Image 1 (tube, one colour):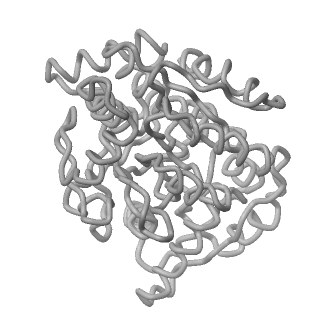
Image 2 (tube, rainbow, N blue to C red; image 1 turned 180 degrees about the horizontal axis):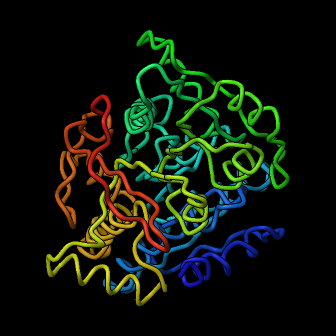
Length: 377
C-alpha cells in the first residue's frame, strides 16, 4: 500500500543528498515542497501531503512541484533555499507536516518575498512579521492539547505516561504537553523522556520509566521507530498508545500488535469514507496516482495546492510571486474540499475551523473512532 507514496519521494531524496550545482532559474512556475527527510519515517510522513499537492498540480498543469529535503547539513540546506528564494519562477513554498525550519530558514525566505503555506505547526511566521505566512496546521499548544485529550481515557487514578523521540518536533511537543499537564494540576502524568540514537534508538531508559510508572496509556509525541523501540522493551505493554498524525502511516499500523490499541489524533480532515461524489473522486484520483489512499494532511495539501495554482493561472504575465504573496497576505478565507479555511490577521488558522479527528489502527487500515473521552481540544 505504501509503495506508491514512497515512490513519489524516492526520486527527490537522492537528488537532495548530493552536492547541488547552482540552481538555474526555471521558466516554469514552481512551488517548492519543503520536507524533513532525516527521520526513518520521513517518506511516509511527507508523501501523503506531497501526493495532495501533486494531484492539484496535475489537474491544473503547467506548474512544477519541486520537493526539497531540509534534513541535511544546514549549510547545504541554506544554500539550496537561497537559490530557490532567488529564482522568481518559484512562486511559493508549501511546508510538509512535521517539518521544523533550520535556523534562519524562515527569515531567509521572507527576506526574498517567497510566500509560505505551512502544514506544519513547527514552521512559524517570520520573526519580524514582514514575510507572508499562512498556516493550515494547528499550533503547538493545540497539537499538545489534542494529544492529551485523546489520551485522557486512562482509568481514574491510573498514570498517563508521556514520551517521545529526539526529533525536534517530538521534543517540542513533549515539553508543551508536560507544561499543560502540570498547569492543569494533573498528578497522574509521568514524563518518561525521549528516545535517542536516531536509526538505532536507545530506548531502555524510557521503557524503564514507563514500566516503573505502570502506565496503562502512553501518549507518544514522536515517530513510529522510537515508539516501536520503547514498546518492544516493555514486558507488559500499555493497553493504549496514542500518537500524533506522524504515526498515522503503514508503519504506525504495525504498532497495533498482541491486543495493543493504537490511536492517532490529528487536527486534519479525512474524506476516505465519505460518500460525497467530489470526495470520492479525490480519493480515487489520489490513490490512482500514488498507489495509496489519502493519509494525514493530504486534503489540506490538495486545498493549498489548488488555491496557489489558481492564483498562478489567473495572474497572467504579471510577477507571479508578488501576485501570490499579495493574495495570501489578504486571504481571510480560502475554499477547501471538505470546508473552507479562515485565518487570523497574523496568518494562523482560526481556531474554530479545525476538525478534530481520531483514528484507530485496525488491521491494514486506520478507521475513524468516536471522539475519545477527555477535555475538548
